[in-house]
Image (cartoon, rainbow, N blue to C red; front, top):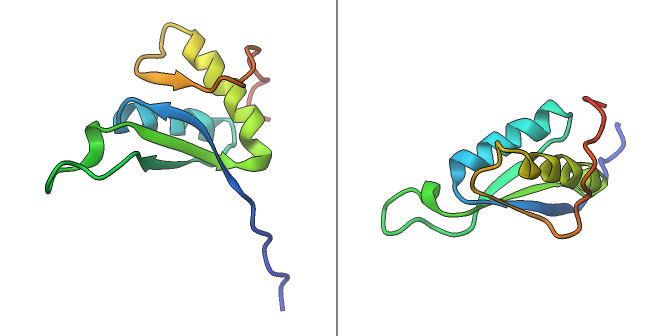
Length: 98
């Protein structure tokens, strides 16, 4: 019998203005080897999709600091449209795909 996997806490590292921006940021984190969960901030109006609502990005707790570093670097660049950064993220870009 294989050992039972340990549970790890998810940590919110960013809020995107909409689903499209959230998915771009998710891809950026995954390119750096960090798994990411995207969740809408609420249900869409009526029967419509929540795609236009803010979306939260979550990573596993051990990856949170590095994810915040990547998000902060991205937000400080000219490519960062529609994102809010975490107040406790660092400003230095982490090394490539560690």
